[in-house]
Length: 114
Image: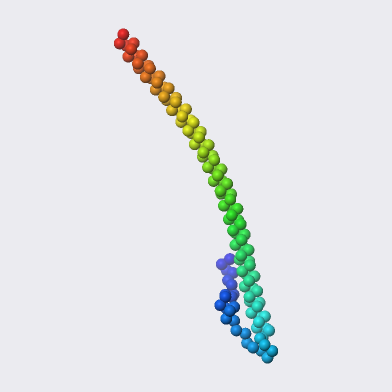
């Protein structure tokens, strides 16, 4: 795309001077100039078309990435929920073990004092 340079710019079109021939402007000179304008606009249209295609590809890729992000966020939430449930189970198990240990210590103290 960078190698496609436009032959004309706005100033060149606005400041173009044609030589006046016997019957008016020289048809050959006007035709040559208009051929340059047509080539320029053809190049412009090709660039615009390429940029539209590139934009469409980028939009599709962006949408795919958004879908992947949503999918991964869902997986993370599920894993976090599973981890929370597992940690709650571990915590309740630890608290039950802790209670059993306390009871065992109390029983030892009570029975050892008798």
